[in-house]
Image 1 (cartoon, rainbow, N blue to C red):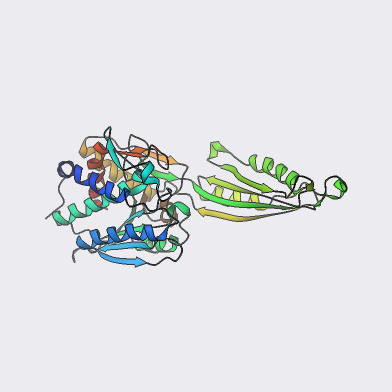
Image 2 (cartoon, helix red, strand yellow):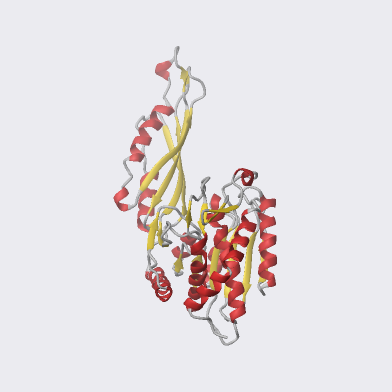
Length: 383
């Protein structure tokens, strides 16, 4: 049996809209903050069971500090020699345990509400129903689903797994939410870096020996001004000093001070340039020492030819559905940054449509769910 046309798929998913909503709510009600391994693993167990029932081969990548990472493989028909499509998402959320009592899962005003509903449990629910439909339709396409547990905190334990599977895949479809209420997919994301600027001065009594002291705080203040000059928003380069620390007591010339810098860049070239500039900072006070540590956490996801080609295929699908699909470049990073940087065609933002990610009004528009499911299913089949 061949895959139905997108319009027929849309009708199919519209009939199952309430079931998709039920799946989303089930996932939302299983709280899964990044730092509570037991809770994330509980959600993984539910997802592993459902995907196994659909014929997936489950593999659990154990993680010590965070939840385990869930990989589920679906084989293709023997006649289909194409590499699998990697469906990439994450099970962790930013909300602490107990948030569900303050932000209960509910349906109101045409939306599903709750912690993590947009980022990104609606995307996971869509995959569950797309896989179920493709199995029913007899679609033979090989797929690998990877749901990591530490995306919200840097993906340190999952990055190697993601990159390894991406290298074995024809393309990567990222289940992060769409951009804005118009449902745009993401064809570019900024790279993200985190640096720590440490200043060492000389401590002294601020009353008795003020002249003998060399203030690390004063030096840090000057360095912060210097760092701020490096921002170039027109080129997509921003540096934000988001956290500072220093000093011990008010009557002591401070010998230590530090700042944590968030760097965002649009291109790999600018990432290298900014790294070089930050490490080249020199002290204003020759009696102070400075050091810069850290680096890029996520490389930029640039709009390469491979990314553009995937977007074009998605546009073809939605034209058959009778609507337009916009694209967007965004400042935040995702695990799609890793796969795109490897040169693997990657399209992001294929999850739910809504607003309020990481906020009290986080929600997903119910009426858009069938169309997102049809888009995802058709795109998988056409890669």
